[in-house]
Every structure is written in C-alpha cells, then in structure tokens.
Image 1 (cartoon, rainbow, N blue to C red):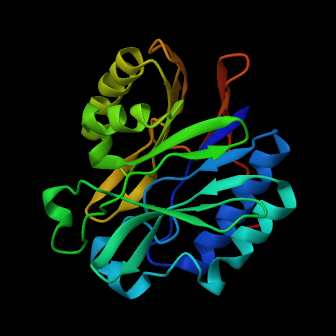
Image 2 (spheres, rainbow, N blue to C red):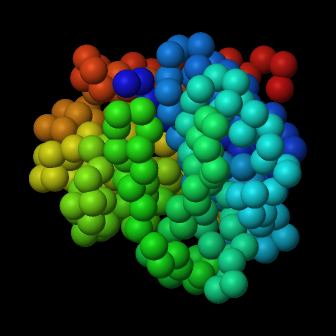
Length: 247
C-alpha cells in the first residue's frame, strides 16, 4: 500500500484557499499511486488557536464536500486537520474522509498547556482501516508520549499516522522520539508537519517515514512544501516536490 504525508504551508484562517490546495495535493498523491494522504495539524485553517472557534466546522459540513468528492473520484482516503465543534467545546480534529463511506473524526486527546484556553481534549481513541492496513492517528503533542502509540498498537494499528505543527525544536525531538516508537512497538510511523508561519512560530517541516525497525526511510527539509510517499509493500519511501501550480 502507498501512503502519502503532505508537508504544507497553510494560509491563516483561509478555508477556501487551503481547501483548493488540499485538493491539488490529493490529485498529485493519487497520481503517484497513493491510497491515503495525511496533512499537518489543523491544515485546513492553519494552526491558529486564536481563530479556532470562528473557523470550526463539523465533519459533515457541506464545505468539505469537495474533499469527499476527491476521495470518491480517486479512491483515496484523506486525513486532514480542522477545528471541530463539539458539545464539550472546540477540539483539534482530524477529519478522515474515505471513498464511498461516511466520514470519521479523530480528536486530539492530550493537549499542550498553551492549547487549553482554546480547545477541549478529545476522549476517544481510534484505529481505522484503509485498504488492508490498520492505522492509528495521532495529533502532535500526544504523539510524543509512547503510551498513546502503545494504545493504538494494542488496538491493532499497523502504522502510526502522525499529524503535527512543530517548531524546529519540536521536530528535532520528534526525529529522536518517533524511531524509538517504531522500534519499541514494531510498527511504521508516517509524519506530516507544516512549513511557514503558524500561530507564533514557524513550522519546521521534517516530514518523514520510519519503518517498523525505526530506520528513517525518507525525510523532507525544513522549509519546502512536498510529499513523503511510503510504500509499505517494498518498505521504501521517497520525498517528492509539491506542484502547487494553478492554486
């Protein structure tokens, strides 16, 4: 199975433009044979906690229909990032759109301290199937606790699907932590980080893939938009420049 992590610069609070860029990424990933694509944390709005309440949308919103249409057209699963409104408050969400199926939504369970004024923590773990592969999603801060990955592994996940918005320091720490997760738990890790301005920091890229022994298969640089294409059948991965012409 081929999976794709997108390293993307989102436009602050601009759902329309970000959505158009997501669609272009999905098209490129599908042309490369990907069956699943994962985007950075809060990719559809940018990682902007102070705007979260005003830009939050449910996964059933008609504004996300173009994403679902692309899933159906290209036979691809899409894990994007979006603030989600719930009865408990706004949550950092990962809408998971699948071809011909109802959407799923995973929400970040462990929040960083500076997120607490803006978001409520999720309270449900999730493992979902894409093709023959079972995946455990994780969103940024919680993925730095091996207990989170261990729970996904115990629920049958065969790959840890990590969506983040990390600084240079954060991504350095991640590149030390995620191979240890892979080695300890015996499953691959696919990481999507943002680049460019986000909240009060600069996204530092470094999107990457590790195999189940913790070997780094491919990684992107700290500033360029691009794709990591992971082939689980051959246990190989490669970095591909992102073509955003026309968006």
